[in-house]
Length: 160
Image (cartoon, rainbow, N blue to C red):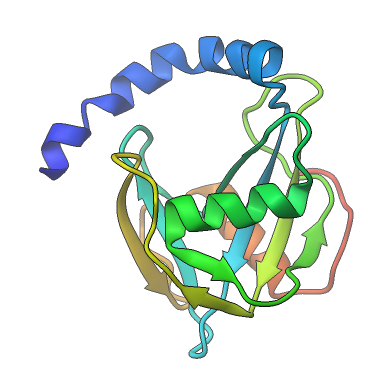
């Protein structure tokens, strides 16, 4: 089953510029939210997508008319099977990545949550908990930097 869904990765690399354009024009998606979800043991939740390599923080695009916290709550349920049970803490006001010019993102830390059934179908290969000091080899550079930021003091510094 896993290998059947991995065909999306090479297609995603080719389609990514078209996706960004589509999202910006039709859906109004120019920003995104990511979450460092922390469990009672101090581990963080990472997801592995079917369409891109590596372990990533759960999150995704903010749709037109949607508040960032609404997008965060929606994406966490979809990708991670996590429902917010308290206020997420804004950690960084602008995060880097491979998005188009004008792209910005928000990074939150989520300590109060409850498990639920994820609603995403076919987007996520795996969900796994990792200690911040023992992240998997496939954790991306940006994932590692964002986790470091979430365990440090809040900041609005660019480039995360």
